[in-house]
Length: 372
Image 1 (spheres, rainbow, N blue to C red):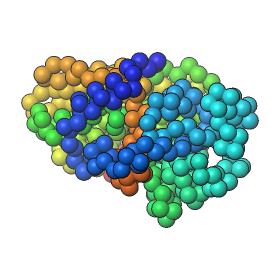
Image 2 (cartoon, rainbow, N blue to C red):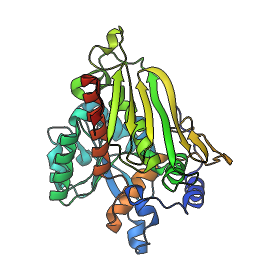
Image 3 (tube, helix red, strand yellow):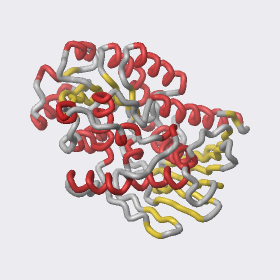
Image 4 (cartoon, one colour):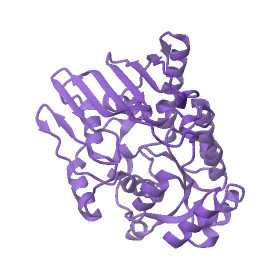
């Protein structure tokens, strides 16, 4: 999906006016967007980000977003493919001393030009490079899913705390106004208590049959890749953490899915009584988040893509602008570091998603309801 967005000044001004009055529960507070202004010197400083992994998301979304940010910039790259490093050096004028491979990565500790590493690797590599980055004295953004399981997440959180480095997860939709409005409407009970949620996210896979997304040991499969958005949507709309899950995996004869599921569905039960049905697939194109509350329904569809979100409420269309979520996300984290404020998308949030995913996989295996 090609992102369409207005000029940077326009979208940031519009988003500030649109969502400036929203205040959520402590679990999903807006963090640094609402923090007090520091000195002009702090506000004008830009922190250097090194992208660790130069695949499609770094190339198509993060690098372009870093051309639009005000508080951070693309300072370096890390890749296991020398030809990629050369291409990125030429395209973005990255100094040779700011380029690393996986073996030389730890030398980044000596480089003051790099303040943040952004781990954009297959999930099986997230724990290693998050911990190595923290030990090297760098703050870390880690893409979702945070790790292979919740235990790995706990190790990553502990390592960053030990190193006194901040850890944030790449949950860009916490900076997207339609999804932010779902948080506000649900958590503030604008239309009464949320009774149920229906959500799905997936696409028809037609890519490389040897890609990591199809390899279980690398963290592949639609639940880890796409379903995590639906889990997040259910959590941030209710503002609660699910306690129970029931899940099932659809049978398939497609040889692409010999290691990972093709389609998986689940039901989450929340302590306030709400239930959320979810589904994800590499065989269906869908993306929606729908909530039914006591006094009406509100929804976004498409919900989770890199742009094009559209929503409606009992009062009519949401009418929010399309924004560059990744630029807002990275700028916010840079400001959090400079202002010593907590990020709204911390490692603990990523760990909770992995606890839910772990429980979904357990339920598929047991055929029973499982505790989260």
